[in-house]
Length: 441
Image 1 (tube, one colour):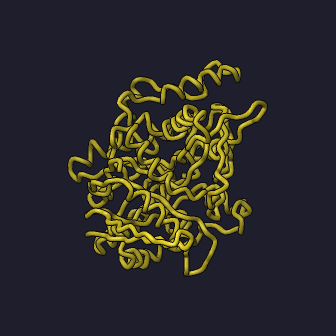
Image 2 (tube, rainbow, N blue to C red; image 1 turned 90 degrees about the vertical axis):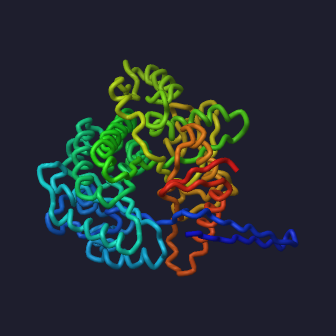
């Protein structure tokens, strides 16, 4: 199917106009995405177990601005037929949704599999396929079973095997129909933001070791899940699996900040990608070195960034079929001034790197103030990933605009999507399945 979009810009100031005839190539696909807790509701339906959101928002409703929870949400658990109808009516090529770990495994562990939970996703997947919409399934989108969180969550190394058990069970039920999989959504949020700031459920703040222990465990959990699919299911069903990274694109504030900016990119994107996508595997060497030095200055007898054994490095290396990219926004990077303390990573800065992250006063913002509207960052991030990771295929799995405006004339979101698509189009594409192979244009 050829999707043609024509963008026209009229300028009264310049007294002229120009139009771009932007033709996306045959096979270019558009989709929409949700996550289980945000849409399913039915928090206590059948034998579903409790997740961290269920417990936190029932015990502390003030965590959300209006005291609401996902107990009902969009009621997709009951209204799944309507979801499919909307996806088909919109003309979506694919619909990305996540599976609730505690709906499949009520205890969080493999000792009990919910028949009703399995059945719900069977109905959703089969209904999408009948409607010509391809399901793209995320295994984990922030809704950890409370039983596992009570044991330390992503800071407990045993979660690597617990997640692998869960992934294997999900694959066993749906791999015959689902061809595109995401293991874990946005580990930069899950680890760096959650442990550094502590304002995301389950509200755990421990910024010394938490982000880095979580970082390592997420990579190992992803790798085990990928290898289960690759060894057992890919030979039969030929699907693809990746992990969804959400880098913030980083630009130097001045020429003097270019080297520091590249280090910050490695600290953010590289820590979650280099171990998977590079030929040598393991942490970015420059990041590993600076973390060892900084940890020593803090009095630690070891690096706060835990090392990989050679076995672990090999387990993680090469566990991808494409690069899953969630891309929203950008920041400007500069060195911290003398006696200036950098803000919290990853939104404001990094004490470890002695960098400050800023926004350009000219940038517009969504209602979620951390999301500056920076379309060119999309194209530049794609360029960086393609160059660093050997021209890897990229599937853009998230992008969007946060607004509280309930109006039907959603002009801000239209502008946002249009401008980001324009930047994507400024590259040459070769479309393979769901992924985008892009060359510099």
